Length: 360
Ligand code: BYC
Image 1 (cartoon, rainbow, N blue to C red):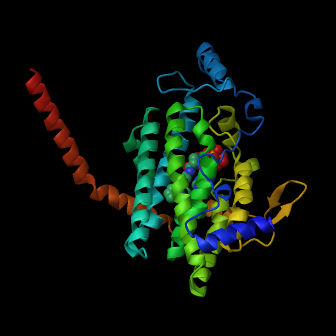
Image 2: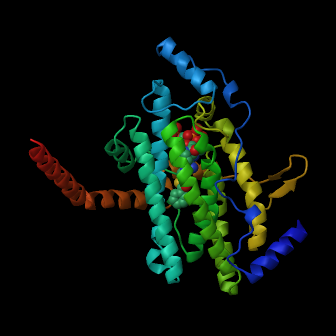
Image 3: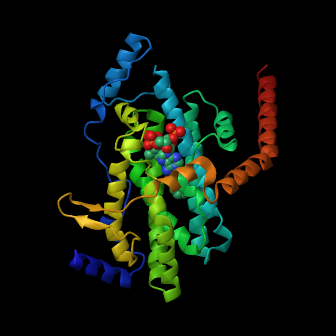
């Protein structure tokens, strides 16, 4: 490991843009299904038994469910909940980094950041479209977000204080997102799974651009290095909480896995993220802020310290440092955009009327 790190460090010292392939995530960083997901007994159903049996058979065979297929109401509701929360996370997730577009340190960094933030907007739109195939309108989903009823990822309720935060979000937040989202490419609901393939490819670019920006800062002045370390200290624990509550306190996991929506549990993904990130931190030259973080030979995994779940739930329930600001920004953007939506609709109506007149 020491030799490998030295080689990698040597390479990085001469070529800052050449990243160690085997240490980074890509869409091919596969996380196999957790064993036993399908062994959870089927929940009692009040649905039509023949339709329910056909659905269960398809799920057990790892087949895909498509929008026109029959599905139990509870499956549909779970998907709308998860996909709409995911879409909201992408849209709210544009804000912490968008905050730095006008202050990026160079033209190159600004162009990369604009592209990344636009990608997040695109992810939100694919995901709203995927959720709409389940019969819930975008207006209904947005109303849930704007009224504060709907959830979005806890991670976007923290402030981005320095430029290093932008790099750390790419490295750790997008890194955690990829870890969670690669198994979702195998989700049993077709439109969600297909949207995830493209999302994961784009997230790989996001993670790499963040890591590369940090590598450059870590070869800079002592002040720059301290800025990176400070950002890592502030974001590390929040990224671990992104994966959701511990399996024992996760009310939706067992059923989500039984239906093939979730493929790997919250704790297993969190562990994989820790194991993958430790060598990346070494190459970067930063310390992960956890005195209990150490390799456990017996488990063949890293042990890590206690996550502050009280803080997580406070944030999820609307009391994090930036919750109110994030929601207010989204509501204002929606109101400010009303004239654009009205104009687009008026144009579409005019076009339709003209086409009908021509056809008559
Ligand atoms: N934050 O039973 P559990 C991105 C909620 S954006 C807030 O384990 P489940 C990016 C959970 O919803 C990445 N709430 O639930 C964008 C549930 O509440 P409800 C976003 C959380 O669904 C821009 C309750 O806690 N990714 O990549 O089985 C820039 C109990 O949890 C959180 C996704 O949304 C949290 N962190 O598992 C950069 C992925 N965790 O709904 C990057 C899709 C849990 O019962 N979602 N809760 O009221 C999932 O994979 C799953 O929904 C979760 C939770 C693993 C998040």
